[in-house]
Picture (cartoon, rainbow, N blue to C red):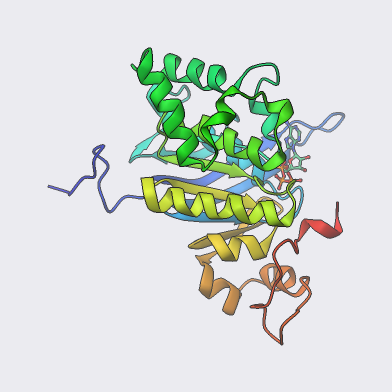
Length: 283
Ligand SMILES: Nc1ncnc2c1ncn2[C@@H]1O[C@H](COP(=O)(O)OP(=O)(O)OP(=O)(O)O)[C@@H](O)[C@H]1O
């Protein structure tokens, strides 16, 4: 019999597998649909950090939304923990994958204290009650490396980096196995970005969290990810371990992306400064 992990997933199966996913949108005044994602396939293994990079409008967020169940797919399959998602997801399926966004305000009620916001989710999705919820809130602050005093704050009084850490705590509060992080550091100062990137890396190490990290910033992807998928106009054109892709890009588009980044320390791309990004020239 195949060996299984703690939740019954065969150890040789990826945690997430997207196979030939197609997503299109109706276009106003046109008969044909706009194909935002075409035959996209990618995998995220247990405790892997996988990058999805591409320029603005390439389909990253659309594919991410499909993975978390916010966007219907036309065809293809999304399997999680060895099982394909059906048209409707079970509560357990929904809990297993959580998402964070560029703007953490979107997932935080600005009027609510952080303790109340976290407690509400914990109560809704877990059997914890009373003092157990308080203890879990404190534990979550420790996990995202914030002082416990933040629990008494409201999002409006917090810095961008603190808010993103709270958004991560919110996502972690129901013990997901996979975190889909859609440009989680794009709106932050470079020094704050590094702290969030380190936190995501620590969470993989400490709690075995798997992460699909979406970014237009190649230097951050290189720092954080084990492997990377390059998406161009909805097509995943290259999917490789990070070190290989950066040293020896195979697709013309990947080469273009790499050459678009200024070289600071010599002829190769090792010297990229954090914060230099694909999207910078477009934003
Ligand atoms: N609901 C929708 N209806 C119509 N078109 C859409 C919809 N959502 C996305 N698109 C289009 O699909 C394409 C891919 O968008 P998507 O947001 O996935 O790109 P992205 O790579 O995440 O870009 P960015 O980095 O700017 O967020 C874009 O051309 C976008 O305009």
